[in-house]
Length: 201
Ligand code: GRF
Image (tube, rainbow, N blue to C red; front, side):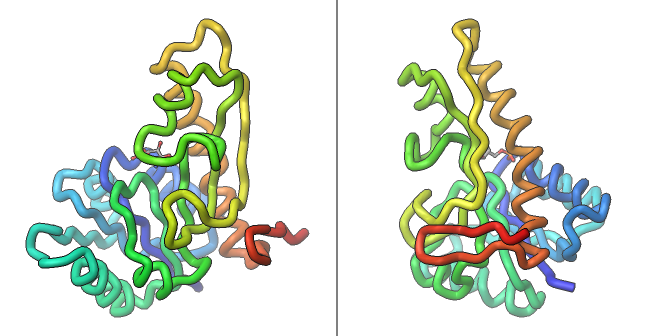
């Protein structure tokens, strides 16, 4: 069985959806490690409660982003991690890190990429006044929010929408499609050709 790690920086509601999908047998892989760059991330607590091994490394103890990433990879290799899922990991991975796991790192982004990249996808789309927005699940490349797209789900932004209701809607969609995309990956159903990801039947 493949082993994977989930990286979190905050609340970890996506991590929770992934934990639940693993438990339900929808993702047929072992969630072997939850890593965080923040000691107080609620995601770490959720992992502990689910009996999953956790790791926190403090960036402050490392001289460069590269040495931090190198140490994370050492831990991942030790655990025999085959692929990585970023679930609200608010730190950019170095190009070197990404090269260690080519098309084996999956991220969730709360907008329809390539629109509204960056830290505030939900708010940026809302403030811009878009009539549709949604969620993107994609492979991670060295450039932020630019890797090949696995799945997207779009929905209409109504006139009554507030930033809060929109965020709620986004998270609901994330929790639905993120575990599905991970399951497709684990089942070997994603074929990457350049920027295109084919979903095999
Ligand atoms: C999600 O909206 C995700 O798209 C973004 O960060 C948020 C993480 O939420 N990258 P949570 O920690 O999974 O609750």
